Length: 109
Image (cartoon, rainbow, N blue to C red; front, side):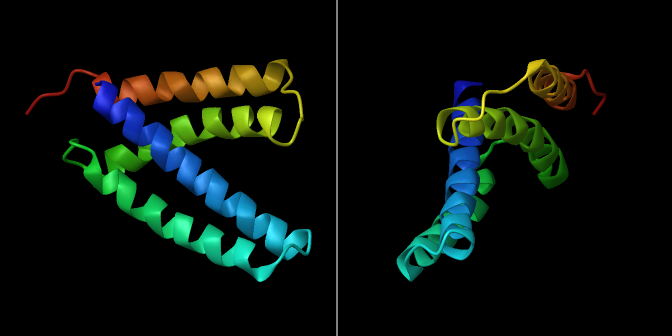
């Protein structure tokens, strides 16, 4: 379980971090190496989920989506200094609940 959680967090940081660097390059006129570095990090993001042990691609990405939401709220708070409001937290908790259902619901076969 810890392995899965760590991979979800690593994938989220790679996706958000890579996208953020491209954002800075294109929207805030940072040097081109920001964009190049961001693109390389996004390639890494594409590889990380393949290291999950779950057998279903769709299920892994659906569960990751909820983790991504939580990490995005935290990124906005820590990096962009935009304090999340109660609705951000409620939405993030709903997403996290969805992750739990997707990953650990009892299934047959």
